[in-house]
Length: 117
Image (tube, rainbow, N blue to C red; front, side, top):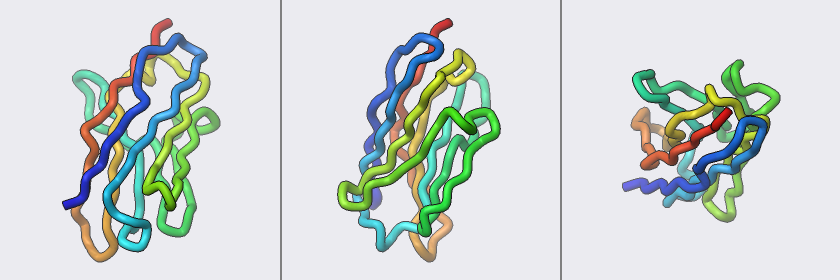
């Protein structure tokens, strides 16, 4: 099974920054793509940022210019740098990956991000 462990969430004031990390149990040779999602109370889970096997990235319009997704293959890690945080960024953030040749989604446990005004 694929295991993902997230960390880095917390409470921050508007305008501040947080860096989320996700450590996964498979190496880069098995992975097709990775991404960060978030879910606010009473809302559906939404894509925040994604990075493909080839290294290309895409972002939700609401976070463009503020968030950056990156990876470290040697450490089996994916990161989400969040700057200029807004109260509407408050949510549980989840790491997700897919393996080559499979449509199955693997999810982390989630980490809470709370942005105060």
